[in-house]
Length: 603
Image 1: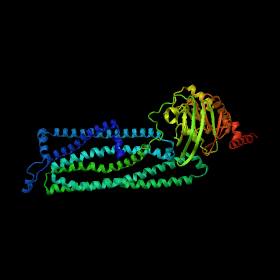
Image 2 (image 1 turned 60 degrees about the vertical axis):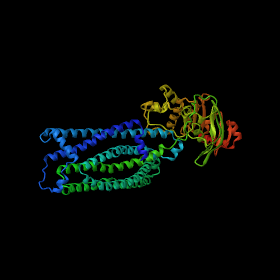
Image 3 (image 1 turned 30 degrees about the horizontal axis):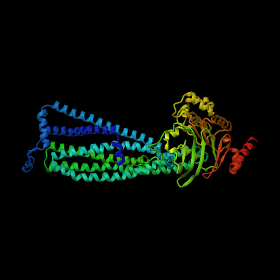
């Protein structure tokens, strides 16, 4: 609940809207009470007074109540007994006032809820962009997507309910209770007896709702993850004929979710009937007690019962809306689990911008681990500006980790990485990453045009985009598409082949024109002709940019100035290809196997 209220009152813009809502809410409550007051005037005009009233009762009511005195004053001033038109106009004005205030109040509370939801979604997206890579390894797509879509919607609905429950309801209850005491202190005591009977089931049900809501939201995450996994791996599912297995898994999660939703529905729908039953019981009791015990006149009883309705109606709504608030509170707790997660790679106050790369990149005794497993162990490596350095080794040796440490996707556990003698942690992350162009192992394309995918946030001309595409051997297939460079790609570029996707990723890196180029298995999805073309493009960049090439296919590193062989997180050897053929048996074996496989293919 604390997180939910913090979300509501955090910004000054929302606080201003809340103040406006309070003012409108006061007018709305007064207009509702004026409706009952108008009803009292009508009943008083038409009532007949019994001639047989005991002297004891007459003595009890020989003085008029405050409400009676006000009613008489209004009647005298406006002469409603004779002025029927004035009475009708009075009723119309009250109805119009209530209609206007009701619209403004509900509309304004909706706008507040929408604003909170919008700000929360924006804040959530901004925050998760700053979180480290290990956060994404621990949280799946379904979980993160559910929080920004489902949870933010529940929070918005809860905010709307909060404004009704914690602003309108208390004000209505207090002011209406005051009017009830002014009308009949005796009958008002009945309301006090009924109030605890109403409050207890409301809070009892609310606790159950919040608990079940957390379970539902957690199961929605799992349910969404199953669906995402199925859609992402649909090709594998079909090839292995695993439709029945997938359906069984889907049904299990679906049934579990439905069971929890039924439990929630039972509590959701029970609160208002319970409160309604209790409220109407005390309303009937008040009516009978007022008429037959206190012998109140019809006008007073109608007015008092009308006030009871005004009193109990927001409480009944409170019971219903409180269920929604508890769902929102559960959603807010889950969302703030992510929002309270602090970024591990934050820029220190003294961080400077990396304006230009002038000298070298140094890895000095770098150690890094995933969880408790050391992936890099004391790596020492020097890369001069303009050099092409290849990092090779068996799968799982730690090659890609080196590429991820340089742009600070992860932080080193021991040692340091320096650019021009300054630790990368002393540069701002934005300036550091702006100086690095990166081609990952698995290319990823966004739902946008090909031109936008290549430029990707960079303000570059169409000519430079096409030039980068030509260097990446992508221009030819792009021009064969119906819309050329303006073709909108499907999700993750799945309407292109793997090789075409990779070539667009390479074009994106080349278009960035950064001084450092990181290529992590960049040609793994290319055919031999395309690979040779990329090698030519990379060779042409030699000396112009500093290249760090991580490769399994050693044919891509023949022109490297330096080759580093890594195994089990340790640097085994370093030197030119000729030097490693002599000093590193493991590299020599890889090289000979590559050429042997080439000869086999050619034959």
